[in-house]
Image: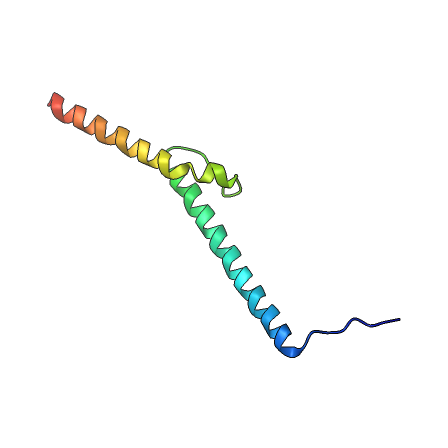
Length: 81
């Protein structure tokens, strides 16, 4: 029975470095997804960090629209006074 050959030591170090980087990027991705979901919540929408990327990508536009509506409402109140 043949035993698998282990990669040379420098290959193991490369795998460890890449694994560490992937772990870091996964955590960064998790934090960014949570931040977008929090933004949606802050403007009255509902979003989960686990929803699709396509849905998360719509959140900045939704925030923009809410801000525009608020500015418009503020201008209307100012004009009435």
